[in-house]
Image 1 (cartoon, one colour):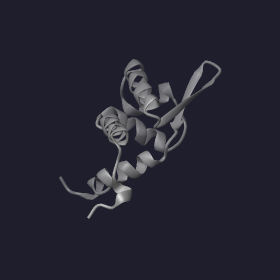
Image 2: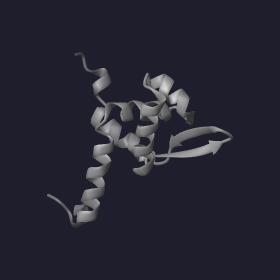
Image 3: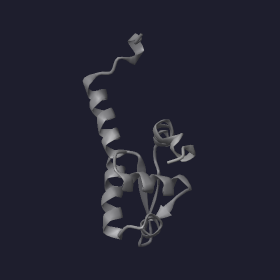
Length: 103
């Protein structure tokens, strides 16, 4: 049975839907897994994910707008890190058992 506390406003529902949309892309999930290990440059993220720098930059912009990651400039480098660690709780809830299941 739902409690009064569990009722979401329409704005909260929209925000939750937007977050799930952000997490629905495999490249963005791969980026989050890279950043789970710590701050990383855009070029290094691209290298580790195996995608082009422009593609990674596009996805990083989406993740930044969603508030899941943050960017900082250090000279001519852009470093990215997790801004909201709760994203890993969401990922763990959805994907937690996937790594241990046989295909």
